[in-house]
Image 1: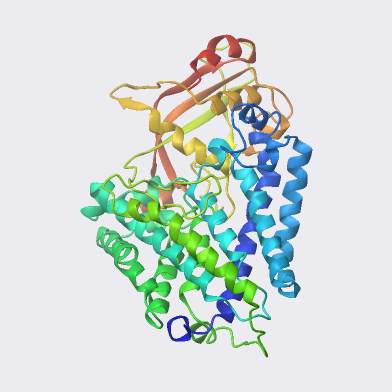
Image 2 (image 1 turned 60 degrees about the vertical axis):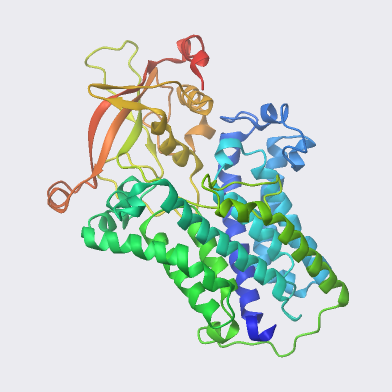
Length: 492
């Protein structure tokens, strides 16, 4: 199979190190955000979720019991294992021990994702779990690199790219008429410092960008399954495309992970030009290793049937797991592009009685737009889970001339407002700034704005990245005293 794959020693090295780094970031997010979002006193407490979810429905260590202390222990264990893998610790282990090491990382993160509810309902969680599972079978640096796990990861990259390309062509006309990038950089979930500049490029460049995206995600993926050097060329295109997405927006570790999968399409002949290192001697694989690998290949073929059929379906699903272990999933991103950006801005006051002269002050989130003068920050590959869910909220709102219609409120959002009224320290830690850091506000409201980028002239005059227009009130003023009586029944 050397003629097909080429040498894979550097490929294995980069796959293991990059995914160890992504695991490290993922467990860092767990330690910093899980408890205020999903802990015993979180916005969507895990104990309440576990009362209605069995181990079969949600395999997790927390099915034994949940406590914030156990969560912290799992988070730190995952962080330590990730750091050890990043440092190359698994290279000194025998094959079987390395497999157990990596699968322990996978199961720790699986335990978190499967109880994470909406805050962990993102496609890149399944991507990390799927890739992390198969990374476990690559083996140590001193052993001949097995081709089967590399091919499985290349198959995952194929499904990721082609799934994303097909769902774009099927779902939104702007991908077919080449206009999606007229809106995308302005309306994406969390813009980064360069998103404003990408948005202000000429429309001809935006149209070319869509054509390039279609080329990379619909045509190029078939080259990933070809022998070298075709696979390396296809992988390089995919990695370059992901690099453009990395520098133009914040998508957690989605693009970083997909970029890392690109290494599976390369070989050491390509990578050796950038990293002129090679092993002195590689030991032959024991027979039991090859038996495990063949079983792994057979299982992957079986699990690939439904995701493959999904690629050819008119009702193609996006980011769906066919099993609770998140193995061999279906992927696809941005099947539709939002044309207008609406933001929910949360304000508070410490006035005892409301009136026309009441002074309202804004809460500031770490990543999502708010302050018009604040440059959009670079967040990725870190993931701000609360900010992302705040981006989704306006999708349920109907905007009409003179106002808006709010059909109901998410339970986590109502719990979020209640905890802000209580000035809960864990909840406030999820924000960049609270207008009342040392006291409780008396009232909180949520205002609905239409946000747009400023143009170059406005930016030079005002130093503002955004301009906004008031649309209406998403949540009327509410106090802690009447919160339970007025709003719990409206939770969605």
